[in-house]
Image 1 (tube, rainbow over the protein chains, first blue to last red):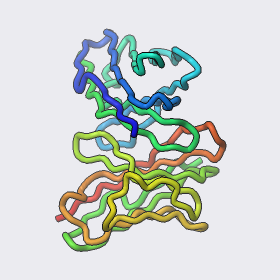
Image 2 (image 1 turned 90 degrees about the vertical axis):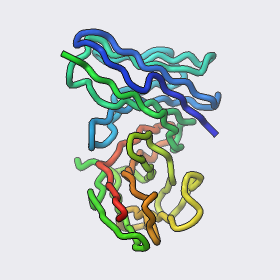
Image 3 (image 1 turned 45 degrees about the horizontal axis):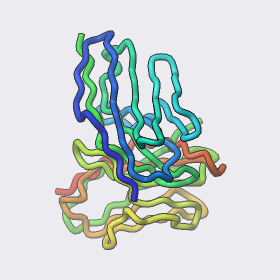
Length: 112
Length: 115
């Protein structure tokens, strides 16, 4: 089955700096890659996703890149703000109605 | 436009009791997924259901756990004879029926504590 690895497990940045979180996946059939943000005690919320027919997607301060050949994808957050502090999870799926396989999460802390 | 609704939000059970967790998907969604999140860990897939059908239960423990999504009413995740290791947050997600669209929206979760 699919295996998703995520790095780093913790990340501290200064406010205004950029943050990058990286994930690799094992199943070449995976074609859908969402990123979720989870604040303490809250539900995971989708912040951005990418499908395998594109290499990059951007939404304001958040961008995701995908390298299908290397089987890795990354989340980039620019101009970080304290409210970006949360746990971020990457995930992979073969699309359609199929299950998501999650990475182990990255605790992002944005310091003033 | 209510999102995915889960109840109860918190559930306390003693060892050996049964736990029933309920999930109502978003309006227009007929795919339901259950995930389990242990403290400070990621989400692990348990089961995927459509109305009256279990599509994928590959992540479900073979014993004590069952799930259903009846024609009417919410999806139910049932844990019989709970043990301390079942303590976790259980999240439900739902997605639309159209093929190719796999955006899963999560509920607020049920936090199960087994004493």
